[in-house]
Image (cartoon, rainbow, N blue to C red; front, side):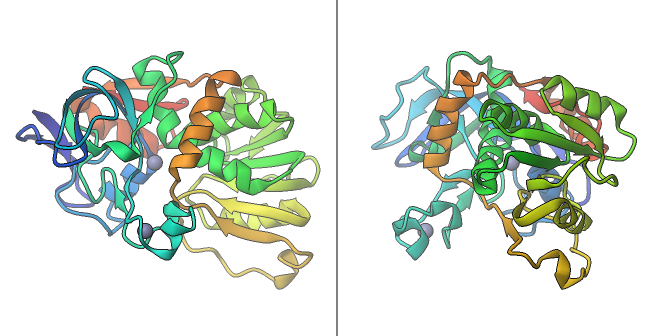
Length: 327
Ligand SMILES: [Zn+2]
Ligand SMILES: [Zn+2]
């Protein structure tokens, strides 16, 4: 099968011909129909995320169809369309797993990081961590729901009852979260890279009440903020923008260092927190909610062989909505 691999972090992905993997116990062989390109893939390709195996086939927003079940697997019949997310497995035994917090598992297996993912024609996945997908979405449209949507949704829940919600970084996750937030009655204030007029227009089209440069203060104080951009300086910017008791949620897996800031900015019971990974409960809740909003995903598709181009576009902030590879 054809696949794109991270071989040397910091270098472009390498096209490879690999044997089609065989499903082990509890696993499914999945034919990849679409795979979203997530900022985490960029962190893996760039060597900013050092856990995981090498070489690795990245990709953890996989929409595929079941080809074959391994021994003991039988949750999804052959031909079923399923989604494979970032959480590819958890130990089930650690203190986090037993408390329903498998997103924090001490020994997780992340798709496209610890095990090969969806930048390929086929992959295998533990069926217990796969999701059924809403029929309303095409393969490419469903792909970004599986990480951008899921992590975005978890971040939105962590932001709490914010009437006025700031979103810093208006990429794949933000374009989904903005729609859910608006549906739930939040007013969305979207912050983009300075001068990104096209990104600001896109945010307004998706129902943001205001959109502007991340260097600007919002027109009024925010109740909470979610940061999707990997820039630590935005934590300080967002703290300045939120009211007393406000929450700043850092949604990315990697961020540049957060600059020192005066304690006054945190005082008043303001909170900074990160959001890590997802639970299967998050996935089920979000995938049931998305078609009811309804969330419309905007995607730009690329052939598998153009994975490097898709990553470069994401790095440069030149993707409208989400980039999706179609093998
Ligand atoms: Zn665990
Ligand atoms: Zn992701």
